[in-house]
Length: 530
Ligand SMILES: Nc1ncnc2c1ncn2[C@@H]1O[C@H](COP(=O)(O)OP(=O)(O)OP(=O)(O)O)[C@@H](O)[C@H]1O
Ligand SMILES: [Mg+2]
View 1 (cartoon, rainbow, N blue to C red):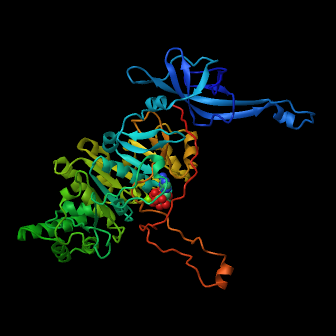
View 2: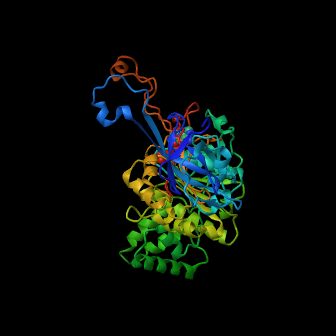
View 3: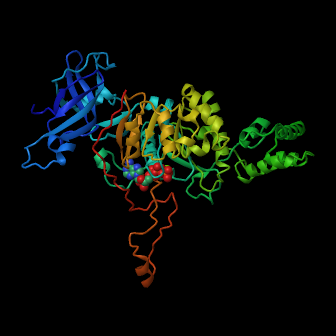
């Protein structure tokens, strides 16, 4: 039994069995192992748990006085779950006859793991299988067409992971549009200064030639931007305005708008938002004030001033447009998303823009779950989630509050990337939405180390744990230190001159020498019951 980790014993089934481990230090929970099967050949399995017991230290015996310890009475038992094996046809099979007791269990070799888990093909290099030097690659077409969600609590690495994927999509020239509430993604222009990229075989790279940052506000508010985003504001119809207003306006409000726009259309060929406001103001209805307040909100945002940005310029092959919401009122941001995404889907249906992907950060604000909030962009994001695949428009939704994101949107995301989540309600929401979710998996999600994610996708045979690749580009959402490392105790600080205790860098700024915490990577793999 030289290379074997242990031997199968006791009652076995087609899905699980127990192994007597020769050495407790050679195997860990979530390790992949292989065992020979008379019919199916080598079968990939995963250690779901390990127990240790020692007859010298049973409950009874620890209370007994006894002289001299027996040499060793330790038993180490691994509880193993069967993943399966691929036949000549490449289809994964779980054995129909249980594994034979007495079979030796060995560490699984990388080729067997890759082949069995479905990690062999795929253009998007996301990271490495936790505990192994095995690259995890996802199929780009299926990833984009069938949508993706990245969910975790704040500071767990969602935007970092999204950055890694965006870089990979840019490498494949996939057209991208990013809705960026915090101005974190303009840093995709700059190469990373982080350490440890070589571990993943990537090198620093900036995508300055591929990124265009647009601001719906003005360049003075957001000097990081390359230009302004302006929406078509002339000759808006009632439906256009209703869509922008989001919260379904009452019939009376729609009536006021209808009358105002009908009058304008009868008088002239084109009109703008100010003309509509003028007409609504002239209405005799008392309900006009509510409509005016909403219209003023839209007018204030400058969104409809000047020439509209051509929709074709937002989604282009090999390019990424970032709509940075810095300086844009939170109430206006969903309006922008609503209009841009609606026009984009229409343009895609007409073939005016190439197939691509829309990335929505802080998705709970743009597609909130019913009962938590209402946003004008929810409908169009739902539509893209349910119909986008047919038209080649993919969605990547990112949120720190899985429970607060519209279920219709989340349920359509075929690739789910989950980083650390501890909140009970959010874990429950994940448990409902993730295929193959077990109580062990929920426990794993609560304790995921920084930079490690659970990825579930139809192109993978089962959820896997992945150490996310390092970014080639600079991460724009690095945590801002609150207390400087030089900070001393309050008493001593008062005695001396004040030190720079608080760094007030803006959220998007990246301290040049900032190093992300290198979360200790557990060399563990995880398992789920099928
Ligand atoms: N895979 C990783 N490797 C190294 N550092 C990482 C990794 N993932 C995240 N970090 C670091 O962790 C910090 C937080 O990451 P990130 O900004 O992605 O969090 P987030 O989940 O998007 O948070 P929020 O919800 O607040 O936006 C950053 O400083 C980042 O550099
Ligand atoms: Mg983030």
